[in-house]
Image 1 (cartoon, rainbow, N blue to C red):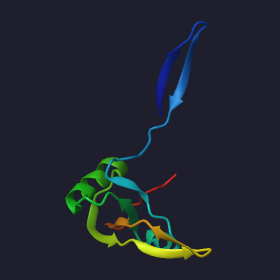
Image 2: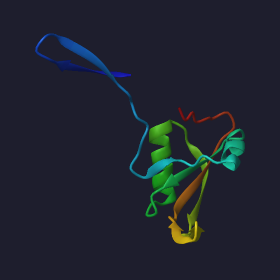
Image 3: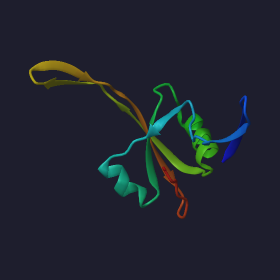
Image 4: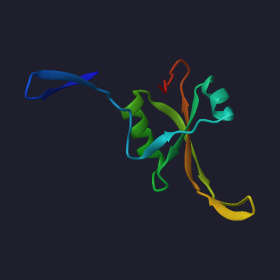
Length: 110
């Protein structure tokens, strides 16, 4: 972990700064029951920015998690109209990427 020195009036304090594993194109892992079972076989699912393409996601995964994807599959998630307690609403859509890693590679999420 990186440390950051903060000067105050009395003395210097060292504050640990977490190295957050983020990238502007990757919104975060998509954690579902299905994705959890697929993660055991080296297949991981991420929510991504709708404008991202496969090559950009491949570079982002390599940069953030230090693993090289073998294959990437992308799916657009459509908006859905729902009714909750008689009030119509919308579920926001988006885009997801399914990342296939070679045997032995793993990604740890926390």
